[in-house]
Length: 150
Image (cartoon, rainbow, N blue to C red):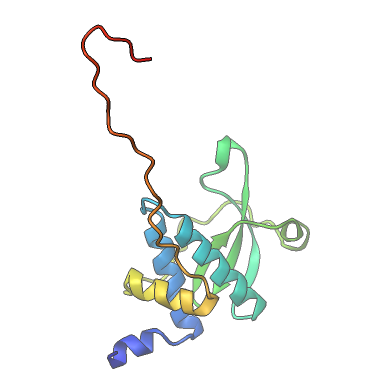
């Protein structure tokens, strides 16, 4: 491993927040984003517990489910801001900040998705399930013209 890669895998607040930013950015366009969002949420939750990140307040979601009004928790982690799903306690303890400020942006970072995933997996202890699920596909059956399909 070269010096730059080992430096990127240090579990500092800066590296972790950049890794979460990278994973979050890729999850928005991934085919199966579920694992990436789980990795992000667990990393942020652990950082909050270790007081490396803080919950600031609640924001209205930009894309609420089923067109209902919904709120997300705004979390500050280093120089970055992220949203995670709220708990019941969050509604009681955190102030509601209203709508998201569209002018506030996270700093740009250059970290590969693989490096970010490795770093967050090392930090959270979560492993990606790469077991290819057996596809339950059947070969098509071609019936003669006029035969019943049943």
